Length: 253
Image (cartoon, rainbow, N blue to C red):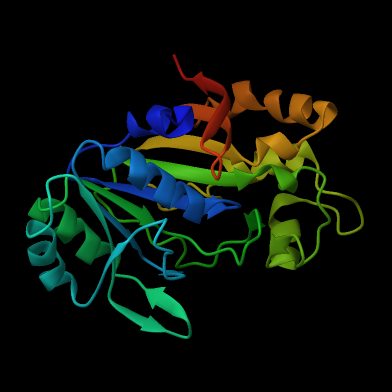
């Protein structure tokens, strides 16, 4: 049993989207959480951006077509199943639905749970957000913000940060020194960070992924941020999304 996805599933709500933002493990979280929720009912996995086509291990059933037909497709599926659904396919990736379409799909009720990848970071754990990002459905009951632990001490370059120059300018990072824990805290709490466009009533959960890659000093540095993070997030957890492991979890009281 995955302790990580069991923990995260309690923040999901039936017939309301759960939005995944940030970088450094979103897709692993999408399919891992989907597998956990499938034990409780039908699960719709989708995106408001673009994702690679899932492997059979990630999700066997795929629907590509208009959102208005997706609900009918779901109704024909078993009571416990998961479906990856997108509007089309282009350039080797599946293209998602507009946030309003996902709100309508969730309200339709054919899926018991809807989990949505709402961000793109080109595999980086940190990013600068353009004005339109991230496209989060308005009825989302939870926002799962992901941060890769490799962000701690990373180089302030395009190899590590999506739109690195803009990120450094916004968050006060030095272009000549590794990214500090202080900079990461600013990013995670900033109105232009991974909680940008969050619905006001949504629960906010931070998943620090790839925790197992941190040495003792870096792990202590990251864990020291938890109290400050809990001023804005409802929960913070140290995890491995790929392994489904939960190392530490703190919730706001």
